[in-house]
Image (tube, rainbow, N blue to C red; front, side):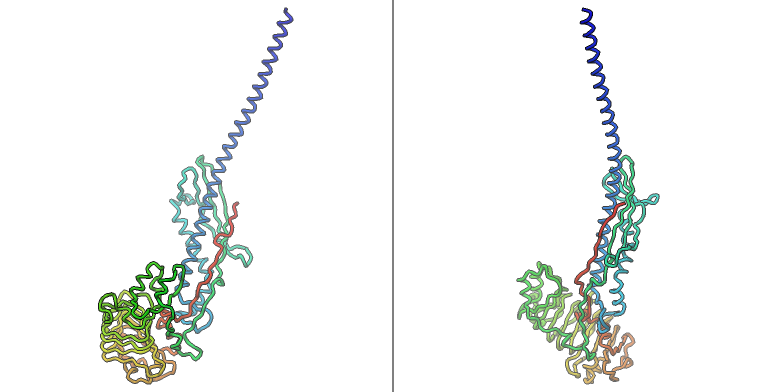
Length: 473
């Protein structure tokens, strides 16, 4: 009996030892798991700081890219609006040599703008500057990224095909447990290449060094303006040349083009008569300043114009491939908007006052062109330009040119070295008289480019690799 009891005791001990062993093993695994969890938590916190730094780099990379695009867009707009010259000295635009330099040094323009614009970007995106760090605006309260220093711009050592700048960013990331991570990124930005711009050159002057009216006055367009209404021109660009049908009013055309995405500055309109701009339900067929609307920024083109009352009309662009005959023209112009008029000949029945405008008289194809004044011709902060070779055989016209008074500029092209016109012929202290002998200089001084007779750059392509690559360290 005693032996059976001992056997049961041994069996119970074995069971207890087995349970203790299993419990020990379990405790050991639990301790290891808890240690692993603690390590993972530390790694996660560190990763959060790194993520914050990466967010900062991405934040600035995108902003820098967009900023560079903005700089290029501004430059492109500026280049497109200017009359750029590069190929030869027959270009017609102000300050030819300066324009050449501005084209050739576009890379320098980009580089100069870059640092300034990036500095502005940092300030704009920052809440504060504390202890050498820019405290940046972020919406995530658990993750912050601060710029340790301003962006460095260093010339790259890339080959010639990929020449540009390395933008070095030092970004400090912080997690909510105040773990920090420093991330350095190098963003490569390619230089802008002036060779990306292609040019289209148009010259006003011909090989004989004379202004050629056939190049100044355009031919009558074949396309009717009404066809612009029927066609989809929303995706078109450039100048729309068209002619008004007989009896068609310009105001109706503008109204119908309202949904075609065309600005007045995009229109060059030919009309058979000035009456097309005098409808508006106010005495159609009787043109005068009260019902005249020459469409502001649009370029209006006609063969001959005769208006009885042009008083206080202005702020328009008018080309007359013939004679402009005016009855009353007191205070023609607008103090707030420039008025441009290009004509071959002129017949002024009464006093003519040009305000804040430029008027160019090219003369007809003979040398006895008409510039007829029954009374006075006064300039008020305006410019009058004459091609002397077309008027010098008309004594009356020449005397009328000499009688111009007021305040402004009188520019007379003298390609024949004629002695029939001299500066001292003008007895008007307020008039600034210039007598160029070069048609190109004459065209520059008289702002021919307003009428499209210029040498300009057409921007066909403007390319840059905004952010080629980002290297994280």
